[in-house]
Amino acid sequence: MIDRAEVVIVGGGIMGASLAFALAGRGVRDVLVLERRTVASGASGKTGALLRQHYSNRPEATLAHLSLQTFKGWGEIVGGSCGYVGCGLIVTVAMTGPDDPNVARMRANVALQRAIGIRAEVLPAAELRRLQPFARFDDIPVAAYEPESGYVDAIAATRGLLDAAVARGARLREGTTVVGLHAAGGRVVGVETSAGPVAAGTVVCAAGAWAAPLLATAGVAVPLEPIRVQVAVVNRPAAMPREGTMAYVDTAAGHFCRDWGANRTLVGLGAGAHEPVDPDRYDERPDPAFAPAALAALARRMPAMAGATPLWGHAGLYDMTPDAHPIIGAAPGVAGLYLCVGFSGAGFKKGPAVGQCLAELIVAGRATTVDLAPFRPERFADDGWREPWSPHEYTLSADFGHKF
Image 1 (cartoon, helix red, strand yellow):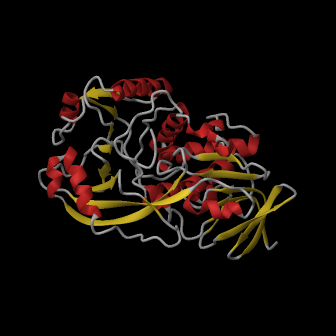
Image 2 (cartoon, rainbow, N blue to C red):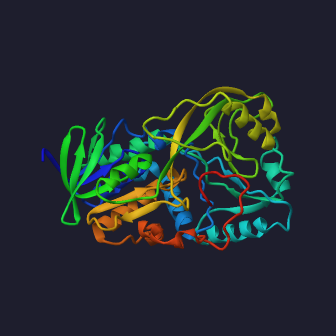
Image 3 (cartoon, rainbow, N blue to C red):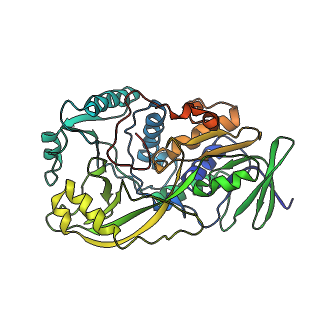
């Protein structure tokens, strides 16, 4: 083979970047990251990069919380800036009134989060109106509030992790497509790329929506479906604040949003906005009807946003699993091959902690920061994956492509 590495990571998004940084930090001598286009050119570059910690299950809430600590302490941990903005975040779930089962579920979930160390509380509608006086909350009795959550610059964060990994000895090769995996005797021995083969005793697939056909070349089947998801950036009217608006994961109103610079809001939709696509042949431009639909959803929470002006938008990809939880762990039947895929639109916020945990698994044989067993690929071997991960999982009114 014409090249060789100790560990090859397929994919230069937040997961591949975080893993490279963590492996290099643990003394792995030669980590090679292969990216088919440019760093963060896939889902990581098109995400809203909201830092929600609100989950109904402990493993994902813990990964999100630990990752937030990295985003907050970026300068000391990674170096430079990831553009962290702790504007606060509001999470809503559709509720018919104070006796709706989702109210009790939200209180239980926030109690779980607080036990992990997350700063979170359940606030009544009156307190929400005090925090966000331009918004209406007459459709829900309570919502969850996270004062430290917010968002980051997704490309700056991904680039920053890879720059730091390279400074620790890792290598990055952009414009190199991995077209196949080489396995022999029940273990991985390298990858085939558009520039030729690379030998490696450890390979990690963090290829997102492109992962399933690549893994199939080594006889590994994963239930992933690429779906197209759109966002729009709009110019707020004068009736809205110029900046400082909180981030929202507003399943009750059917949207998520955050500031996108002064006087601008990025918004995405829930139900009806997702469609299965070929990741190599999908339209990266937004549909003409998307921005008006997004403004209508925004206006259900913030009436003045009905007068906002669409500026631009784009379409990206989610790599969906059947249970909307990620697949992280060793590939069954192929020693040395690891999976880090299927984040179903909710991966970026967990990226730094996922990289740390997967590095522990690769180097020491066990993840000690967070047990990765719930994310194992073998869970799809039977119908056990259909069971909820928490007794307090919500009944949602809108399909956001992922669960809480």
